[in-house]
Length: 362
Image (cartoon, rainbow, N blue to C red; front, side):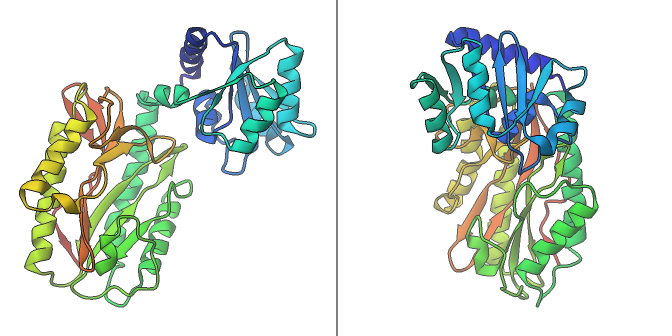
């Protein structure tokens, strides 16, 4: 990972903002800036301080050896907390004559309050400074996302053999997770969604004790993680014979998915990509049943910038990795969602999700 280029870009932003330092505490931003593979897990206590003169990584003794090894040969300096990481971080900044700094707006309120009090309120909260850098993925980042997508593709093929009448949604979700972990996924970027029959009408249904029945549509939304990077995909399958109305819903969503994919290219406003898919569903009197945006960025987090939705003010850039995931949700009846993960290119997109999209009947 080219972390030197990332630090250079962030320092340019510091200069534009006329601030001497930025403190970074959000886990995925810390990982992005440091590139410390094998160090930063979900339970780490860590922060970064970046100035024109240094890039400093703070953590505790649990991660000391791994952090020092990861920082070797880089410009990162590792400091291990003695008692309280943020007290010591503030003491270091004050000893160096730094009187103000920038801080991510997504930090917990208590942390913001403490840091602000140490600097008499001279802490400037900023939005998306690092997330904006993360928009456009480097080739190695895309390789990791593609590897995660490949695990998910194999998981879909596997899970189609495990879905049957009488099996619960929770059992299917557990088997998905087992398979992806066995296949090399580093945990789950999010809890898999398995929503059968009427539960499919809830876009983020929680898998539960409902037993899958013959005639159900089953929405499967899941992803893997490789090298810290996530994938995200959705397929909807039918169990036994499905009705003409279920088939109509599926065909409409598939057409919307293809229309959204066809609209993707560098420079395209995200709202226009959303509209391309949404218009397909509206033309079939299904527009009001598409209740979320068409997609989102994917990377170190499963939901990143850019946002692909009707109110988005962003445009696609080469190297964005986004989802295209139209859906229709009929309360009390069924839901259908089809989601592909794609890399935005100058003249179109490269689709990372290769699982079949024709309606699979189990």
